[in-house]
Length: 138
Image (cartoon, rainbow, N blue to C red; front, side, top):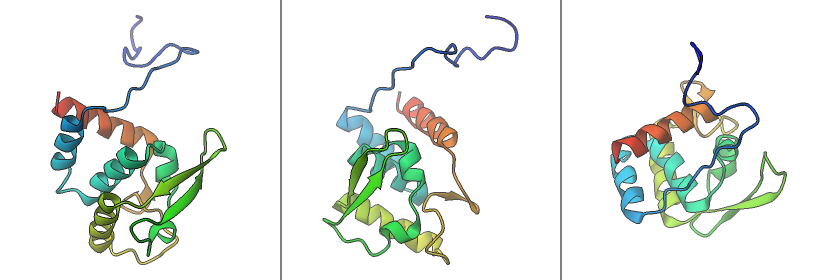
């Protein structure tokens, strides 16, 4: 490796394998760790319960999910593949969503659901957060 290269960055043209968090114990530990941060908890719960890509979750707007009830579905066009995928509103997501919306009290239904200040958070930001969460539970 030459000076200035990031050892964590894959070589150009190579592929990286991304494994899901499989053990229920780990999912519960991260969920507990995030219980005091409604935004991060909602992001984690939506991702683990529906298996949607981060980029697709970050495109959601308040108007997309506001008023959804348990059992409702939302069809999402995946950014990477162009395929249609479904977000299912289960009890866990619904509870996390209600807590989050109550905290942020969005003024504009057209604003992005996952925000940092006034901007939507980035995929890289989420990737870094997930690495940190996983690191904290070993």
